[in-house]
Image (cartoon, rainbow, N blue to C red; front, top):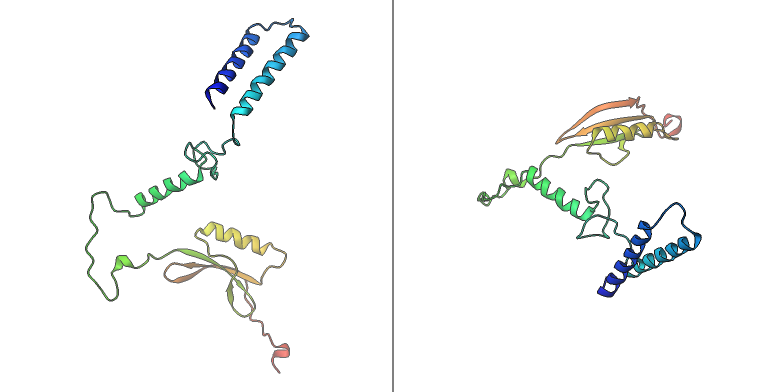
Length: 190
């Protein structure tokens, strides 16, 4: 907003303020029309001075950036940066001032170089011959169980489902239904 627009808008708003102070119960129709015109002029001045769309976030750095409803300023970009900082703080990031341990060259690497084991829940369905993965592996057990519950209620459910816990090894947690071996050859391959 340039100086001329700023002074014109200020003048229009002061005129509207004077109208507000002079209002009473018996305002004539002509006076209301005059107030309406002054309000329109003020709104037109504001329209001229506002260049783009309304900001989607409350972030001064990214006013038109992507929105994250859970962020205090609604800015996905800033919230991603904050989450990364928190993750580094809690996820084993080195404290300030600590030096990295000197690593000796090793043919097989050291323990810290190996990836940490990941815990996942694998939803599987019985296809008549074997267990097969029927959905994306999940990091949350309740989410995996809810997914399998939805699969069992679907229009074409499998004969049986199971949930497998994967954490450096596999462990079957729960089985729904009874898996029956189905021979793919008719008449039992006679």
